[in-house]
Image (tube, rainbow, N blue to C red):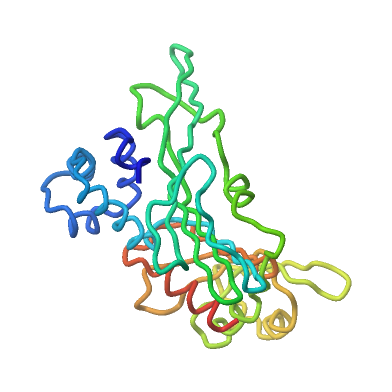
Length: 279
C-alpha cells in the first residue's frame, strides 16, 4: 500500500473526501467539518491507519458516484496484479481487489493566467465471478476552483477510464449483455424508466416520457416492445422506498451501469448484485 503510505496528506485527504461525512465519522471519531475530519484521518501515517483507510474505501465504495463495466469471460480471467499508474491496495479471497490509481489534472488558473496540476488517488474495484468480470470506477467530478483562491478549470487528465479498462482487459473478456437482469428488475417493479433507447428490427428508437412519467405505468404498449428488444442507454428510477439510490443509467446491451449521484447507504452494491444475479 505504498501509494497510500508514501502519498501526501493531501492525497489521502482528497481520497476520503469522496465519502459522506456521516460515514467518515463512523470510523474516525473526530469532531469538526468534513475537511477537518479528512485531514485528521489523513495525517495519521501509522500502518494501522493506512490499512483502515484502504478498508474504509473498499467497504464504502458503494456510496460513490461510479461507472460500472460488466464483462463476460470463460472462467480463466485473472485478478489484475495492478492498475495503470497505481497499485492494488486490498484483496479479498483472490476474487476482489481495490486499486488506487494516481491521476494528475492539468489546471488552468485565471486572473492572472497560470498553469498548475492537482493529483488525486482514484479508486477502482474489480470483482471476478465464475463467468463475470466487473470493473467499478469511482467518478471523479472535481471543481478545481475549490482548491484555489481564483477561477480555474481542468485542461486535461493524465489517465481516463479508457486507460484503466485497457490495463485490465484480456482477450477472453467481452462486454456482457445484462438486458435480462435489467428487465427482470423492471418487470418486478423495482425500477421504472422515464427515458430509453431500444432496438427495433430495422432502427434504433428512443422514448422520452412527459413530466417524469414511467414508461411501464403510462405507456404499456411501448414497455412491452422494450421488454422484447435490446436496450441501450436508458434512465431508470429506483422505486423502492428503502434505497438511497434515486436514479441510475444503463446501457444493458454493452454491460454498462452508471450511478450519477451519491448513495448515503451504499445501495449501489445491491442494485449491481440484483442485476447480475438475475441476468
